Length: 245
Image 1 (cartoon, helix red, strand yellow):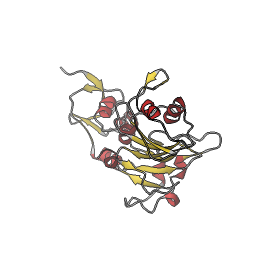
Image 2 (tube, rainbow, N blue to C red):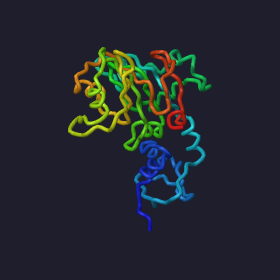
Image 3 (cartoon, rainbow, N blue to C red):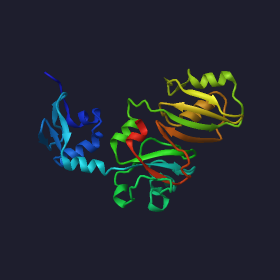
Image 4 (cartoon, rainbow, N blue to C red):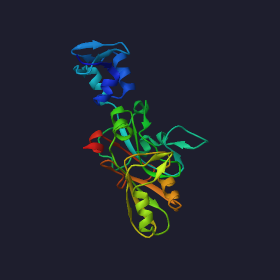
């Protein structure tokens, strides 16, 4: 007999929705388990149960949007702090980029639940994804994500091979070994660093540990999604398929 598991957890594991979204859908009676409507939070079901959304639930999910923004230095990723502007305030009709060819029109309801999937420090710039869709957030920052994040890092000096090797593997942060990184010298002043983890201020701390001072940091790729020619401070709509293919 299969183990019982909370329905919201099972939906998250299967990529149907985030747990929070699952609870919202369950409360509205929009989740079907083996063809039966479930509307009680905390309900446990068999791990091999058939789980699907009712038509109205599917329609709600299809209306969820995600965007990528070229975050400027001085803008915070999440909640406003110390008078700084949060990135979500740049999500306006006026800031939608001309390179957006999604055909989606901006409307105020898209701000509901819109949150960053990951962070960029206030003094860093580049690609930041904001989303209403828990599936997108999980793909980027979920515990088991394997998506690469690529950064251009200006250190204003040429790295030695020893420094490059240290950055690639062997460093520890907060008492834990870091995963292997891809690090290469782009020019006399700039490194390219590719990570598939995201500890707080990780790249800056890594660089400091090997003797570098970071003078500029830009994220240019998350998974398959590239910053490209998106102008600073502007945004465009993105899809889950653009991230993971």
